[in-house]
Image (tube, rainbow, N blue to C red; front, side, top):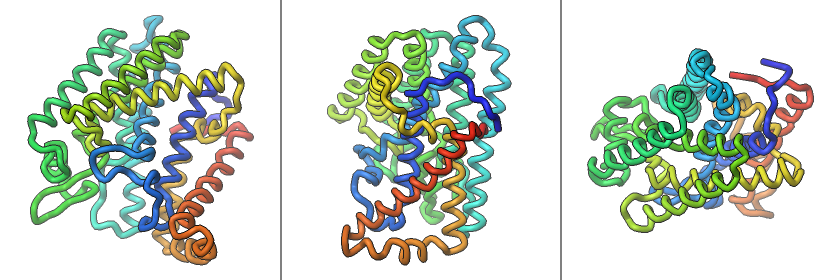
Length: 358
């Protein structure tokens, strides 16, 4: 924990905070059977607003890495940062495993799940940080191209891209067995939306964030706009052509480009509105304590479910809303209250200048 943050760019904190708030909103609906369609993930191919949340966060991880390390790397001091990058990546990864262990214990899960959101963030933080230390702009773009082309070729070579047959899920099932999100012991098939193989696509998202962070750091807003438009157009074209679907579960190259392009344009818009035009950074409180807010909300949900408090709170605290707004509106109301509670918590932390680092 630290009481004084480094110099920060408000738009980046706000965009990161928006992603965290959106994570809490879509992960805590109160009633999973009655969720408005935009607040659910696409069943397989395609996308909804919810499918933008995690890639936007990973994109901002790359942007933040660039802002924190880019100047020092450019001046030749990058080698000294390797230990810091590895240590923080491991801390994030271990925190994710601890949270999953807590859920396994309190919620009586059938098996301990190894992959997860924080685990993927930790891997992407560490690997992209090391790539950025070792390679400059051309090398980083080469890494992005290699990840997109190599992973795309693997997916196309490996058979159908449906849930049961895709090669990423088959490899994950072989490596993880019952320790993935879904697992069928009879068929040996499984799937994890934060699986090991699809992290190749997530690495490309984070590296794209690094390159956009460099553009922001250099004040090259035209370059940032070009990256956003070209990437989004390429992702859309891959999907429309039928060559490669936009698919969050597999984190396909089309998904990387589409969401990365939209994230770059969102970063450009946030920078113009917040940093230049002076708009208030509404979600900054979440952004400056992002991992802490996510982990705290996760533990809150696990304790509520594990001690069987969630259902009574939802039934007695929000049941009166259903005749007024319907079951979907009631579910959304619970999610909004959950986010509001955590917004109050992170607001107090920010006001007291408490910034929890993992």
